[in-house]
Every structure is written in structure tokens, then in C-alpha cells.
Length: 180
Ligand SMILES: Cc1cc2nc3c(=O)[nH]c(=O)nc-3n(C[C@H](O)[C@H](O)[C@H](O)COP(=O)(O)O)c2cc1C
Image (cartoon, rainbow, N blue to C red; front, side):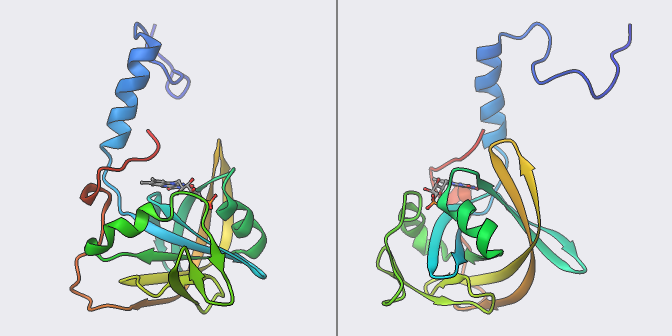
């Protein structure tokens, strides 16, 4: 009998579920990604976190999407504040992403997150002063997906803060991975 398309389920027949799960993770980890710091804000609460699930989604209008863990503080702020910034980093600044993978100490008066200075973008979201470039977005849609939400934002500002030819940090420049 031919298999009807679209209802085969997540585990192929005859596979050991545990072994297959490990293999599937390695394949998913092999997907190429960028690596960013995402800024979020709701009124007086600010946050910045490391994120690799980001992509442009439309060129008219300019839409960018980010996949954010439901449990994260960033998620809470994005749901309420409806803004985010996506900070692209200098490849030389790979150590910076490690500073934003755990809860961050934000000093709003000083404009610092874990000691890294930030400023407000046009949307109000925080942008790292040290970022090579950024896109600043207002959330237009959100899609609930398992343990993540895909927030889709329209770009309301974008700029380089370092020379345009500076190499941009990508996931492959680190030994880190996420998801899988
Ligand atoms: C390499 C790397 C990539 C990550 N990518 C994402 C991502 O795409 N989405 C996400 O929600 N969390 C991602 N994280 C996890 C968050 O950085 C981490 O959960 C952070 O502590 C959440 O911060 P918050 O609770 O202050 O918002 C990633 C972590 C690492 C180390």
C-alpha cells in the first residue's frame, strides 16, 4: 500500500528511536546559522540574549523572524513590548555571545547589560553599542510553535556601527550549537 503523504509521523519505520533521535539532532545541528544578540524591551524592563534562529522572511515589507523559547525572559518582554533588535556581531567579538546565554544583569540607568553598553533603537529596543550592525523591528505577528514562538517583525531601522566590510560572526566561528 502506498504511504499517504503528510501523515508518516516523526520516527521512520524500523529505526531505534533513541539512536535516530541522536542522528536527527546531529543533522539539525549541521544546518548553517548566523549568531546574534537579540534586544527586547517592555516599558522599563530591558533584556539581551544570544540567538541563532533568525532569518529574513519578506522583502516587501522587510520582515525578519526570530524563534524564541517560551520560557525565556526575552519571550515575556517581546510578547508585552512588541519590539526587538537583532544585533550582528564582529567575528572578533565571539566571546560576547557567551555573556548573553544566561540571565543578564541590566543596569538601565547606566545603559549597560552585563557591563556592555547599549542604546535604544528607534523601536525602543536595546542595541549593543559594540554590534557591527543591527536591524530594529516592531513585532507584526507571532506564531506559537511547540516550545518556541516565532516572532515576525518589520524592520523599522537598520545600520552599520562598524565598517561594512568587518567579518560578521556566524555559528560556525564558535563551538556552540543550539536546538537539534
Ligand atoms: C549558541 C546558542 C544559540 C541560542 N539560540 C537561541 C535561539 O535561537 N532562541 C532562543 O530562544 N534561545 C537561544 N539560545 C538560548 C538563550 O540564549 C538562553 O536561553 C538565554 O539564557 C535566554 O535568556 P533570557 O531568559 O534572559 O531571555 C541560544 C543559546 C546558545 C548558547
